[in-house]
Structures are given as C-alpha cells and as structure tokens.
Length: 387
Image 1: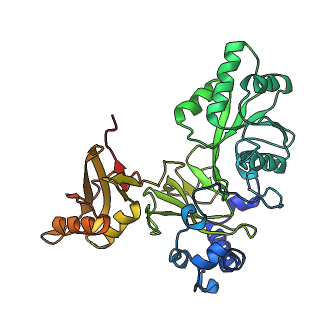
Image 2 (image 1 turned 45 degrees about the horizontal axis):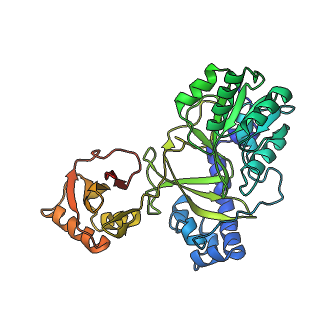
Image 3 (image 1 turned 90 degrees about the vertical axis):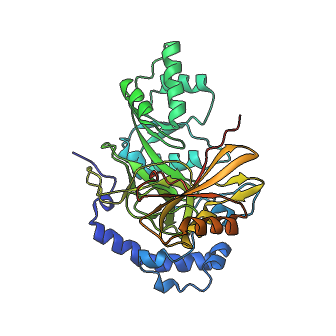
C-alpha cells in the first residue's frame, strides 16, 4: 500500500487548484512589496485581479538575466522555516523513513544543495551523514563503516561509488535506496543501479525554487510539489503550451520569504495527462528534457528564441516553427521550418522578410504540414559542424 508524506498529496485536484488560486493575490502583492525586481516587472498589476491561471499567464516570465546583474555570482537566500526547500516530500517518496541514516553527497559549500537535502531528510526524521562531493575513497569508507540506509546525491557519483566498491571489495550492501538529482538520470543508469540492489528515484529542484517535482515508485513522470504552480511555455515567450507539448518550465513558488512569480527555470519538460497511479493527485511532468536557452550566434549576430517567437506572431497561419542553423561556422545558413495548415500565396516570402527584419540576417523558409516538427521544445536548433 502506498504511503504519503501528508494528506495534501491526495487532495481533490479541484480543491488544490482553488487553494492555489486563493493564495495567488497575496503572493503577487508580497512579491511587489518585498522585492525591487518584481515591483518593477509587475508595475501596474492589480494583485487582487490575479486569481486564475489565465490571469497569471498575462504576467511576464522572469528569467535570471532579467532579475540579476550579469556577469557575476547569484546568491540564493535561505529562510528559517522547517524544511525550507520542501525536499522532504521527494525524499519520502524515494523510500526514506524516520530513523534511516542518509548519506548526503551534495555540496555543502557555495551552493545550497547539501543544506536543501539535509533539511529535507531531517524533516522526514532521518539522520544524515554530510559526505559532500569528491573524496571517493573516504566516502566509500564511511558508507562501509556507518552503513547508511540510503544515498542522496547525483546519480553519477553514486555510480562511481558502486563501481569503486566493486573494484576494492568494500561492502556497501546497506545502501538499498537513493534520491538523486542535479543532473539527468537516464533509465539505463536507473536499471544498472537496480540490478545492484539500489532503488533510485529522481527529484527536480533548483536553488531558486526548491523542490519542483519528484518521482514515485511507479516511475511514470514526476509529480509537481504542492507549493508550486507550474506552467509549460513556448521557449522565448510566456505563452502557455497545451498538455503534452514540450516547452520551458515556469514556476510560481508560494514562498513569502522568496516570492517568485512566473520564474523561467530554463529547463524543458511537458505535462503528462492524468494523475500518478500512486494516488498522488497533482499535475505530472515528464522530467528534465534539456535546456530552453537555445541562443545561437550566426554571422556575428545573436539569434534568440524570443526572436523566432516574434516572427511567428507576425504570421498567425503558422502553428509551430523551428530555426535550423546548418553548415560550418562562417559558412552557415538559416532555415525556418514552420508548420502550416494552409496559408496565402507568398507566405514563405513574407516569413523570410520577417526573418530579415527581426534578426537582421537572411534565412530560408520551409513550409511543413501540421505535425512535421518534432515535439522536443527546440526553437533554435544549432546543427552546425564545428570541426
């Protein structure tokens, strides 16, 4: 029988949605009041009017290059609340329980990852060993001597530990579960670990938002966290995409200490239909599918996904588009491949004129039937040879 971290995971979706929408106006007002960045980006917005996903979608998407000065480091705050980053839900779903010893191999310095995971493990009731990163031999020795029940860290380092244990003959048989994150977790590695007695489940979190989504033992996508209002938008825009279409993950995080409104993560994913078979009723996403920042430099000029979006907006006949850059550096060519169900004569030429007007570069246009482009979220595809 499936266990749940708390009753919120099984709420009626209508009840959950109503609670999220009821919290939105106060959250918007707090962001406007407490932060200079949102006071500027949300200037003129009546917070009391933002009570639906439709009204939320009218607000601008905020990305790091708009909120913070670059170049330079970005410092993320950490509040004092219990399980501030909300990682306990993901750690519980990965099988950790009160009384377990968790070996945490995320970094504890200059990034919040170690603190994020440790505070979440403590909220579950686990004791933690702060392994940090690197020092493979010492960490392996600690696992052999302390015999932790599970591992929390990147999947690649867990693989290194398992391989090193096999090579040296040290026993890590106590490790039977893992909660991994911070990088891609392909099914091949998941199965490789399972064959060696470790059931590993992934989480999706960022230093800005904390936990965004987490995997359950059914392994059918990732369930969105209860404090997150998640949207999938077309890269380079704030336009919400329909269920199943790949786009950028945008989150509104109901955290009064660090309010985020339509924060663009830069990650690609898609919404899955229906709830998780585990009984958790919140929205599901496919997981991490790549990065949405697809800016490319062509003949000395930067081409951004937002420019492709502007070209498409000028031509309502176009359903979807992808700018493909091919050839070799300094001898490259651009082709905007667009899906159209039909259009006026001269449409391709008109789109080519828009390409030149917006990007200041010449590009060809290829008209495709609906469904002719892959559903992978790519808006700018740099397919050049760099040999």
